[in-house]
Image 1 (tube, rainbow, N blue to C red):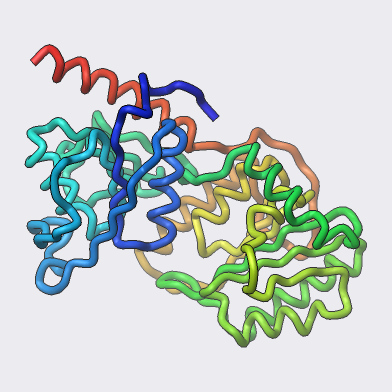
Image 2 (image 1 turned 60 degrees about the vertical axis):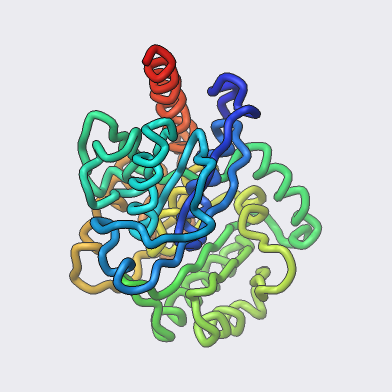
Length: 329
């Protein structure tokens, strides 16, 4: 992870502002940590009609979003955009405003915008990368691996981290699909590999049970949702990764490990969002980090993908120029 990107980061205040969704918060915290900042979390939940008007309309008054304004604001998600615009205006431009994800309004309303490359957003203050920012570091992977190693010590190598998402607005994980995935995973285990499986909240109880039943006689551990989440630990312990395609974050975090990433492509509807996912997956395949899961493990090498450092470095450069410009003024 880059060091000393900002001059005296301990003197700077930082807010991460989202609607509370875990994916948005993870990206914001990851960037803040990469910059050496300890962010204060701000969550907004505007009611109608304000939520309908976001991102174009005004921000609903919120007693928790009030001065003193931070030195750096990292906002993510459509509902956060009116507040980011308001804070930039009310701070007189002092607050350096960062937006993660396409704000759906002109990027010039902010100081810096990061957007995934598959959104095809352009602008002089826009940086795009194939994968998303996250909180993973080499040190954290090692720490989490050491923490969870006793739970999988009995499993033979190669060990495979299996990251299962679920149904969202683009893809569907039906019981039938879960059964097909479970059968392929069991076949991988029959060929000598072991499995470390982490379902998500979107996987569904029935689908998770199908996975557990199919793998009960295989060398496998399926997280039951209790205790500490082994997600990062399993990534650190894995020799390879199998991940469903429904989460850009999960696929990107898997590609950070430098281990072969096998992507399970779920059934999806024909939508604009699916087109974006298609562009993302094609870019990941082209990078050499991932390949579609065919039911078999493959071995290959690639340079790990890490957008977090790249984004943080770009922000640090722009923030330094921002401070210098304001000092001159």
